[in-house]
Length: 198
Image (cartoon, rainbow, N blue to C red):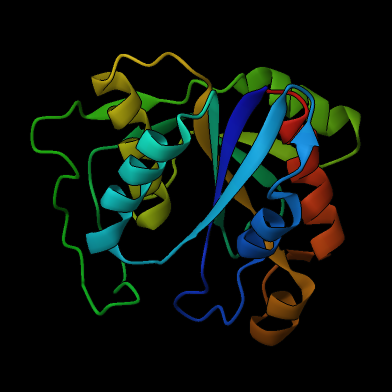
């Protein structure tokens, strides 16, 4: 059976919870379509993220990779098209403050998702899940993880579906800090549809 590596993040910045961690715990070990799901939850720490995804790709040897991240303030699922070779933004959970550094000094400026992004968008909308294709994954940990995942696969000449999905906040976060939100069940549903249409 094929294996799909599904990753999420711990809480960060002003978000006391992270719905992507809940999603990963829910699907870890499940079989969806052609894939057995292997879940990993990563710290929001620039200094650790590249090594963690490299180790997991080496260990799991996945046939597909779906990275998940929280985009507080967005009101739809965002299927990311491209990651850029840059880190910037607010301080991470270890206190590091990025300032426009490259993720890989020798790497390309940008790397495109190899997920079937149009098919995923259509599948979500067909199931009444608001979704868009996004042309920016930002410059924070989400973009870093997407870029590094794609870059490792490129360097190893591994041709598999891989990319990044941003999900909205869940209602507990939305009520606390006043951003658009979905129920955790709806976030789980959206990710399940994505995993079933890789």
